[in-house]
Length: 102
Image 1 (cartoon, helix red, strand yellow):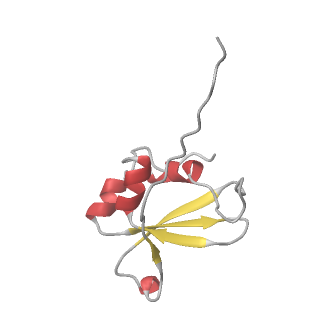
Image 2 (tube, rainbow, N blue to C red):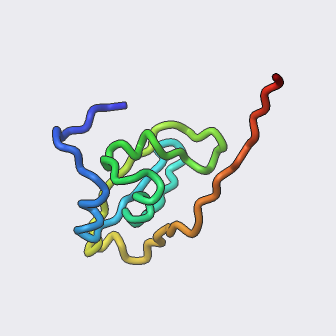
Image 3 (tube, one colour):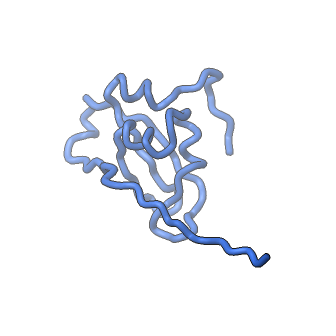
């Protein structure tokens, strides 16, 4: 994973304060999704924006393609016209029992 260009971390809470969005784009299949920072904070915590590329996976293939590009999108930009934003509806947790014979 490449090193970030800045030395200070840039957490998701700063994007939330500025009312900006996070765009995650797969470099392989060119799929892009736009998220609210608060939804990503519920899943990953208040982490650095650059660390999301290693934490998230592309959903088009079950194993994922690999590297995802994460960018900040300004909420007042022209690029936001007609863009669909993904919202977090629920978090499902799989409980799988692991048994041990004694």
